[in-house]
Picture 1 (cartoon, rainbow over the protein chains, first blue to last red):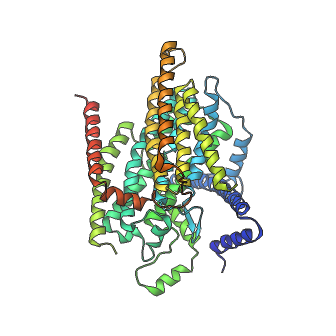
Picture 2: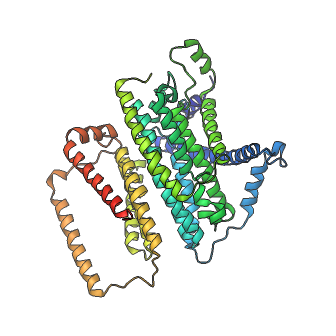
Picture 3: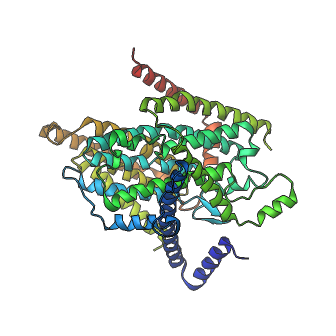
Length: 358
Length: 167
């Protein structure tokens, strides 16, 4: 039957039959790089369009509707425009770091892609600490933002970068704790095992109330970590012009923009993997017939469906809540979310030890 | 030459080069960024040794947390080349001599360590650095030092809160 796993296995077998082991590895690397870059390009186009359409829908207007059918080619036209624009470097800027920062933020976004399982057996690197890897690498993106803000030699950029740093460093904690509370249930950090443990139901439903609390905290924390409204203090337009990327123009600005959307995709993919079973179809306990019907829907459709549902949720937030002040932002994390998620972790441990989960 | 060997030499060269650049950079922000590159190269070495957990913890703790704090502080201090105090020549000479002596001692100790001679690293195999083994060792053999160090961290955090509090 046609499946992504079958295709990858076929390609690997063919490469190993026709080449030496080293050459086959290099060719596989090249294929993975090509696929990752094309995924990024396509996701950028789709997510920007989706954001504009969702925003338009929330505000009862039409959104982009001139270029292509239903305005679907609008983002392609925008990308073309950005490619042709001049990339300016300010005079007082640290030239090297200023030009390096957008690439660092893209590289970090690409690195997080490694352990994500897109479909059954379709994963770049199934390392045994997959979830921890994602938290570790996503904390590196602060460095790129600080680099961009500092190298721009602009007060607004610097303020935006500092805010972003404080925000990401603090919200990482509760995101990590809510991830750990699912790891307590599965007993493994490996993505494939976490997905496999949800064969008889998703953790959001199996883990009772602690899992629901963890899910809500995770969504809030990742919205803050990706610098999205209502937590978009790093680029608050009304106070900081555009925050850490004020001085960027042309394609380098586009890379920051793209990285933001890629990060949203990645955190939503992680959320879908941990709480909604990743590529695992909706299974309910021992309802054999129901589970069998659900298995007919391909696993990649399940994965992208869940991920885009979460992305829609995060876009919905943006047009629902007003922006927080910086002191409200930090007190929300340190005085509310962190104690709640610590207590929730204890509760989850009790649930796991007593075997109360399904 | 296998890919592992190529990667090993690449990461080693990267680590040494960026460690030298940490010292040679005039700008403290550049120094910190080079230090982050060093940590990445060392994490790469851990991954070659199949110690994935150590590699990731190295990134979280050093590159992700401590270096971000360094960057924060240095970026806020507004250090320029003009305001930086110039150390006198005798101080530099004394530093070079004491550093050199330390290097000499370290090299001689490593060369004379008999139980390390003739051993080779396990590349891509061995499971001592994996999370389950490390966790078992920490919570069985080394449980008392582990708990004591956590009390130390707690007291450090309380101290930071007390200092940060507006009387």
